[in-house]
Image (cartoon, rainbow, N blue to C red; front, side):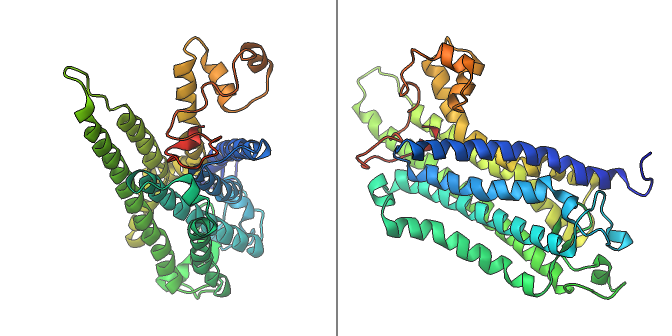
Length: 368
């Protein structure tokens, strides 16, 4: 018999994210495995692929400790108002969850933003693999997100600001939450912690979302201008084609949507919750969609390669294409693809993963 003290929302908040978290863990693991196999084979890995790899690692960690673990890391002995369904943790585990999750979210968001800049730079300014393989370039892109993320998430540790948020996970919020309204003294954190939480979530959300959208729009426009400039070389009556623009536009849309669709409910929730409680529908949307961030990240990485393989192998089935793209070693793959050369259907963009010259622009090269 179920415990009557737990509402449907409390149970849902503890259980639903585990499903999306598990899916994201699998998706990120496949992505990380794919890049690792390329390293093992000594294949050249384009810089955008390394950026996606850098996004996948914190996303995987966050999917496990926040979305999959949920209330399992929340202290058992919480106040009645903040009691959690399936709580099995301690104050230390709650602090760990809040710190690690927030750090990973910020780190992945910053890398996502930089990836949009890299896409734009390769097209607009001709950034080549040779340029992006230089140590200074890689340090300039990989180090700042780590410094910024830790710079914003480490200080709250000293002020005991990581506490149970009252729903499913530990975040930056005072404990107990009644102290925000002056109904009880704060045992951990302070009333200012709510503003810090609001600033971190909403402020970085605005930065990430706006930057990603702006640079992807600029990317698509830059490619459109380049293809339009090539139209003057067409013979009379020859059809104008926008294949590269369409391809980049589709990938750009996937890229933007994969981020916005997961974090927009959280972003809106944070704004509404700052003034009054968010509607239950929005809460459920956030519980279902936000944990799927890793799943959508895998889509950004694998879907273009899947489409390319299907184009070059129209007679093959969807399952055949899927196991090929995911590098799954099963009997179907061995029997149906034995006669297919390993390099067929893998490359479609301006540069391949096996490029040794480093003089091409690796646009969307994660599909290799």
